[in-house]
Image 1 (cartoon, rainbow, N blue to C red):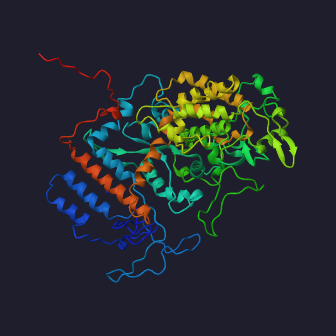
Image 2 (cartoon, rainbow, N blue to C red; image 1 turned 30 degrees about the vertical axis):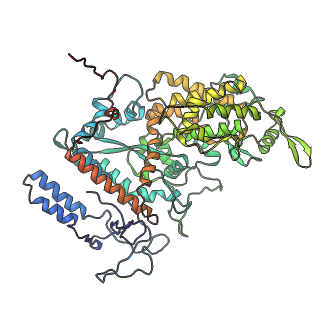
Image 3 (cartoon, rainbow, N blue to C red; image 1 turned 120 degrees about the vertical axis):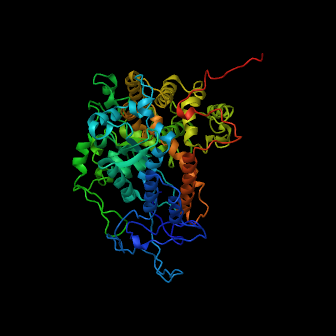
Length: 631
């Protein structure tokens, strides 16, 4: 049974009759109370089960469950915050029915421990067999179709052969974090390590000591160990998780101090255009000043920094978390923005410095931002416009593309000469009418017609998957008869890149050519598009191919599944004043029911199987249809 950090029914985050433990970081065993719902509590139900089981292993399981249900997550007790000295509890709390003081904590961390979850997975025969699939049943033909085909998986197997990889039942984990703000734009930000602390402690235990578990498929006990192979987040959360800055001149998490940003005085933003560094040294683009930013680019590509080098830089950072007066953040002697804001809590893991990629770049959000940027250039979408008067003035300051410089007409009025990518009103109408008439199969994507606003000449309400379908399928079709060839081809090649990088099966021999084409394509866009188009999300394209080589296919380290899961748990909210407690109550209830169903291995009666049954297990459907002719 899972212990989880919770609170009593009157505390923040509870939901109706959701009764959790009144526990945050400080928690004492004697503070626990039993809640009587008019039915036998969990302790009594488990003890009743002991009387009917004489098997030693099953008896040990029951006694362990009883003990675990009464064991708090943390020992120790704190009355106030050690940093800002704020009280742990809300003021003005009354007494409960027993006359004891019932104090409600100000803030609570809800946490489902990972170790009991792994125990439940291995206790189920079907799930335990699937946990061996990556070694026994995965197709091994030299193609990249699984994280095990990436170089980082193989590196861990070689380095920790005796400690970890010798047993194929040991688990490799990826962490994804996403969130919602029902009460306003508040978020943990740099203090998110406080919430990661319980998880990191469990991960350290699973790595150093391991946990004895029952393997239902092999019918034996074994010591399970686990390793965290990386995190999957959107880009702002990547900065909070890694502790690295993701804004300004050092915004790239791969290039770091060699990002090469440039401040635009009129657009008031930083742009990243030095993609010629990734070309070969004798490429003609490197010396072409007039077509680019007016400079000759002779620098080499940024040097990759190992985990050991980064750890040496952050190990002495001392950051006090919190929002109060006692909190501190990392700083530099020169007063500039530091490259790292903190030493991430994940550096406490012994193997963290051995990983080549610790924080994956989310391809889903990169693709969405690039799609919105391209549409903003082509359609001059309000709020997403890139070709503005300020952008033209930045061209004038840099002395490039003189044919696009703004012409002063007096009285504060300027004329902006049309660029090669500028759509006329008729061309905008033609493009949007083409999209409006697109019909796709059911459940393929959203209804494109609803996204088209002919009145405003724009696309509205586009979600991440809509941007994905538009970039990989529709945009190359709708622009092929509108834009000139020198503008159309780079955009179509950009769409083809995202289509190739999102494939489920990738030939590693094709990745070198794909990387070269991506860099050359970005350089061609630098010669055409406004400077403000080249934000950090566009720059991250140059690192996506290398990421596939190291940690596997892009679709497996994107936010698609986790964004959809966020939509599921939002539906658990019943008490809108206590959304966190509602989510915990609904999720725990569903998990208990699913565990019972899996444990009992029930088969549905009278319910036909879906035609998609088995596809999630890797079973195809072609060639399995049978036709029987009557005698």
